[in-house]
Image 1 (tube, rainbow, N blue to C red):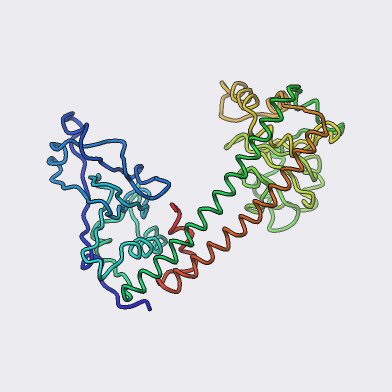
Image 2: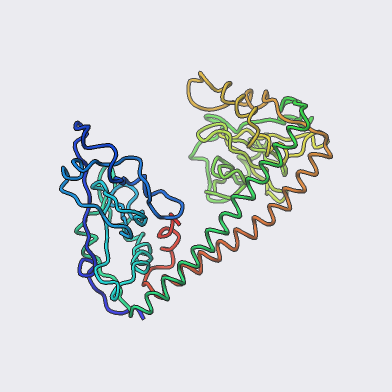
Length: 403
């Protein structure tokens, strides 16, 4: 099924573009579209317009000729392996190769793209360069492509096209669910205009709002391979609680730092590095503490639902403006516990908050199912690539990153 291996330059015309002198204004302007790597970031994978264009003089200056519509555009620098189709005749700079199939009775264009995408791990491995990864045109020309019979190529390409379309739809469903929850929150906050400080809805317990241990309270050398987990930015950065890199401390160290414990339902927000990301500690969270990179809050549940505050901290435009205003002028980029406690957040009646949380839970179940379906589709793509394109099972996730 995989067929014989043939050098790519025996099946395709492969050439790069160029960049005319920036000192010559007559080289740039109305004329032929001129693609750079950023222009390959198109949702449908087809480049029909570009940020810049070359005049006929500009094209002549780089001794170029346009790549025809249908050319496979391949990034050699930086985002190595990024691809798109030329949706019109266009030129490119030297960072992009144009790959044109010479005889489509031997090589199907769609099969070529899928085969190239399946090699992404190899491209990443072989790319070199101190300041920027790059592949040479010679490297791409010398690639040996598996060449099964044309009808098999078309069948494989069609199968992968459908699988990728299915994955795109499932990922779009996840994005739309997020947009829906945001819109639902904004509608509630617009109807119920009461605002209070975060501090006013904290639980009446010691250290209801806390940041993790600083300085000598917890040294890197005190982390262990097992024990009590220590939560950081990686557990919150996706705006949902996830187990990222595992850090632990001993039971003895925990007893010294017990006041930094994270309880089920606590709201955690990042205050250093990537600020403003927020997550809620799940009900089944084990005994653990948080680091100084997080502000962890235990709420008065009769006044504020954790998931409603999560939505407010994530999407409320007034809250975002407050936090940006308060953090300006700081010595280093970041928030502090005082900024978080002083934020004026939306506070509708508790029963309204509870209805929103119910909606959120139902929507999250749909998202969970969509994520599982997307993962299943990833596995399917990997299986197809491994069976028909000779790639490793891990390749497909990277190889079709732009899909």
